[in-house]
Length: 257
Image (cartoon, rainbow, N blue to C red; front, side):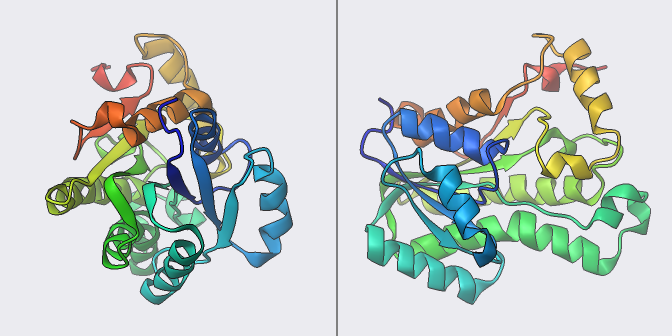
């Protein structure tokens, strides 16, 4: 098993249809011990029910992953109760609904800042806080989730595309900063998947159709497939890879039309 006895923190799990859940399932099946963060104390029972199949897992409330002191408080508790960990999966992103439904040019300053703070800065903060608190084991791996809207214009993706572009640049700089400590940083760019977050994108079903028609494999991806790619990046099998955006999208990213 690729992650036998490795402790992996998965940030941002919401439900069984989320990419984070697919990652959790793959990591668990490959021997990982799982730790989760989620939003909202009122969601505790729902999350506990969601992760009960992952025997021995623990969960912690983290209401805002872009707030320095809040992340420090939760990470300190995680380290105290679990010791050092071997990997972190950052599955956190958000933009205001109006900034996804209106033309990008009408993005508000608040909406622009919000999308970048939650979707990109939170990963930088995650990396910095885990380093400052000395909560990462040697050869730890950090993985975040991105999307091709960072590099191409996709109608309805709007400010989230800007945030993901910032996130991907952050991956490269973090990889350089943490490489001297043998810590790897990568991103997985998943193909479109019907998640709760995807419902906020206008005409999302048409994106699924285009990928199925144009991608070399002529199919959309699943949370299980993205989970397996992420497990690989968390494992020793990928120890020569850092600072990369790995596409898990049935090859759609290579197509010109």
